Image 1: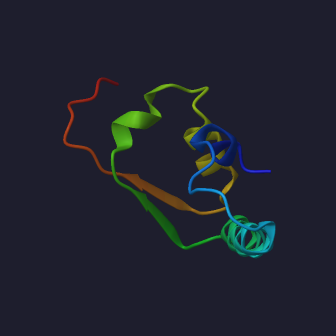
Image 2 (image 1 turned 30 degrees about the vertical axis):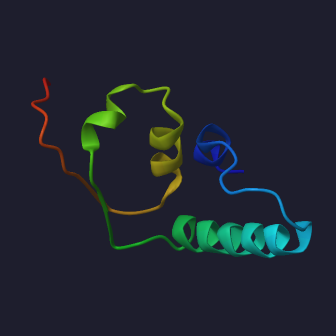
Amino acid sequence: EDPAEKSAGKAGGGGGGRGKKKGKRKKKTAWKELVWPGADIVICDEGHRFKDLKAAQLQSLRKVRTQRRLLLTGTPLQN
């Protein structure tokens, strides 16, 4: 399971579980396609959010199989 999914919380309101299951299935399928075979390049905006090595978003990004990752940010970063 995607760690970012856990940290994102539950979006949306109540309603029937049927639509929720279908949405969850689509999300799982999309996640599998991202991870394997992976994309040629992954571009992430707000790259400064990935400074914390334990962040769920960074852990998810690391699972994506790609040769190139590009992080965009307007915030100055230190090496």
